[in-house]
Amino acid sequence: MSTPGNLIVFEGIDGSGKSTQFELLCKLLEAKGQDFRRLSFPRYSEESSALIRMYLGGEFGSDPDAVGAYAASIFFTVDRIASYIQEWKSYYQSGGLILTDRYTTSNAIHQGAKLPADEREAYFKWLYEFEFNLVELPRPSCVIYMDIEASQSIKRLERRQAETGTSADIHETDFSYLEQSAHCGRQAADFYGWHKIACFDESRERTVEDIHSELASLIFTTLKHG
Image (tube, rainbow, N blue to C red):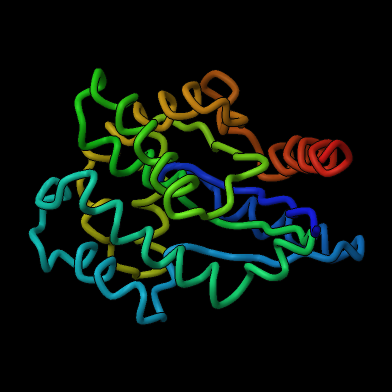
């Protein structure tokens, strides 16, 4: 019987630098000749993300709360199921290494943020039970949570949008929602036991290289003992 592989997830609120660190780690693994596959969710170009695109595009309402936490979570679950079956199930079940930018963990942060703090743990339990036990998606071996204050992420998002001319989705334009997502992200990280990586050292912004060095050490330790 084959042994499932490692599933390493990069997570954080918008503007945390998550995708930058994900890219750097992928390049490092490639340079070292490590066999792995990379994923990114949601898969906006695929049919399985149709409801996600409608939701984030504001077709169900411009307020993130227009669709409740549990219902919206299922939109994203469908895309992950399709990806798993179509793209990486066989590789993962044969012992392969998967790195992914976002996963089930994003629901914990962004959908859990819609709920009062004292209702989130029940949602966290439901989410993992639903996706990993009932739906039978793989459970992560390691989750990296990029820990940042909402005020700091907002400044980064505004700078990025000004530099690139890109438009924001309904999550990124609602600053109070981003603030709740930051609070919920920390709560989820503590509840699930994710690895928290500080984006700031007190008031000093850490360099991309400094964070990458810490992450690389963590990932290689995880793979060594995985």
